[in-house]
Length: 248
Image (cartoon, rainbow, N blue to C red; front, top):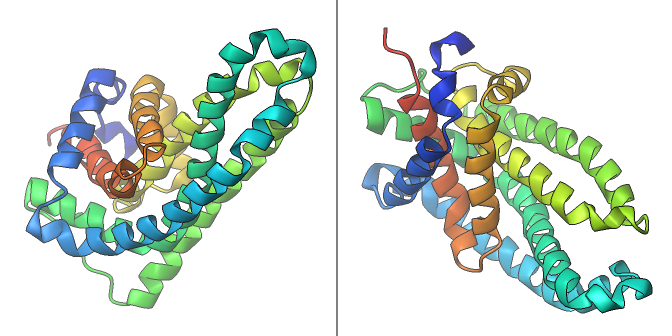
């Protein structure tokens, strides 16, 4: 499906993006989607429990190391800011692993959601389950490579005194952008729109993508909500593109 078939102005509307997120959560209990939601929920429960343990163990020591002594007088302000960034980055990192494992199910979840919304599946069913799994995990690894090549410079900024004051804001902005890329990839890939084209499309709808990804990012940082947020985000991303498709 050509990129021109999507209404970019609608995709760039943050109110529309929030509406799609709400619908994504509302559609989670749908019987036709349940099979493709339950396994990712189990994966998320396992991995986010590990993320919670890691965050609790390293939290205080990490913040003591990150905030320089000469800024102790601002500690009351920087501690919650850096703490929020640390928690979100920790859960975000575990989300990448969870999504890698659950990607074949998210692909089918996006497919079934589109069929539920339109009555028409986006493509014929895969003839080989193995082929589908390899394709989706390969796409997830490409997105992971995109993340790593941009996260490394941000990590360097995070340990440079003075510059690291900007690091939480840069991390939050980048993570929101990437979360949008991550979950919108599934419905777009079902129409043959792969990662380079996905990035070009969302570059024209930055505000909508940041809104979608930002809310998902903060949801992933909230215990219990983070278990259901990823599959809800896949459904929401499907609603996001189905609703913005031009007629004809």
